[in-house]
Amino acid sequence: MTTTTLSLQLTNSLELPNALAWLDGHFAEAGADETVSAELKVVLDEQVANVLDHGNADNQRVKLSVELEIEPGHVVLRFIDNGEPFDPLYSPLDTGFGPFEERPVGGPGLLLMRELTDEQHYRRADQHNVLELTRYFKPRPRKG
Image (cartoon, rainbow, N blue to C red; front, top):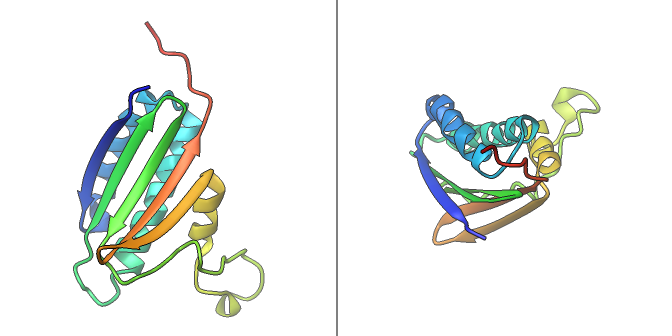
């Protein structure tokens, strides 16, 4: 089985539309249908916002690298950033219940990312946050 690994660098969320377009074609390569592709783009959107918008509150020039590992039947999205240490898997989740001002830090986007992926792993390596999110699916048959 062949693994394809691709990477993309982002420095602000204005680059997100290009990143989403870049991913679209590669999800099809793995046999992802439109639903899986759309859900993975939501995951990308949420994590880019978490890192580049929320994680860059002190304007510390956070850089985000997105790596994509593609195999038939699954995709791994790896997010690597040089921001402050933050484990999104340890953060309490906002379930949407209760008054807004009483909700824990860790918005509904973190919950959504967990629900739309099958495996989530975080580690801190060489002054970088590394978040790996894996999604499994039944690949579509290839045309041709």
